[in-house]
Image (cartoon, rainbow, N blue to C red; front, side, top):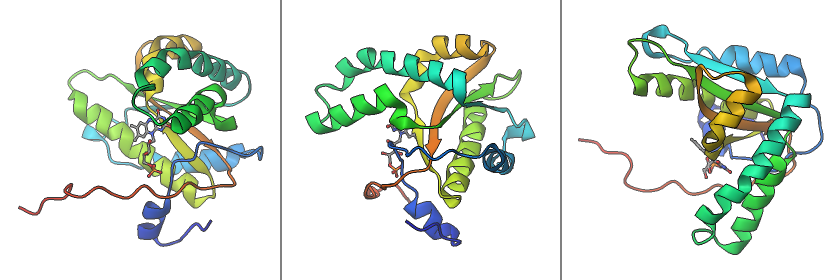
Length: 190
Ligand SMILES: Cc1cc2nc3c(=O)[nH]c(=O)nc-3n(C[C@H](O)[C@H](O)[C@H](O)COP(=O)(O)O)c2cc1C
């Protein structure tokens, strides 16, 4: 594992990590990452992202909800995934990969702002966060399906006035998965 100073290499070598070790992530480091991630561009400079950092009690409660949620996700994946991958996915749902931190990301709905711009702005900050974390030797995995349990998450955090966009599991790790190759035909010079 190497965490390059070269931004091109950093972007290409970041992987989604789904298994974390027990090493604690210092709050100071997490704060440094978040304070820098929010220098992302945003529509009308609304900076409409809201990050909730879960450690300790809220994290335990979240993990319990996420584990229970597997029974709703499983039938939608059963015929689509190889049994080995299904088992790994099940394990990830039931343990959140042992992540010592989960960040839940929301957007604040703003009057007069285009919906797509709102969502896009928040995900730009999310990508900053993923890259900064990786630069600091931390692994991350974006959790998208977790948005299907938005009601429970919003109750847990009292964020009913916000839109839940994704989770980010975060922590130190020992093993990196292989890089999934990039797909052809996504870049068009016209
Ligand atoms: C919006 C979004 C939602 C995602 N949701 C999940 C998820 O629910 N569970 C998961 O294990 N990975 C999730 N991922 C991670 C992708 O599976 C991963 O980025 C992709 O397979 C490419 O692998 P890489 O990140 O290692 O390049 C998500 C990624 C994004 C950007």
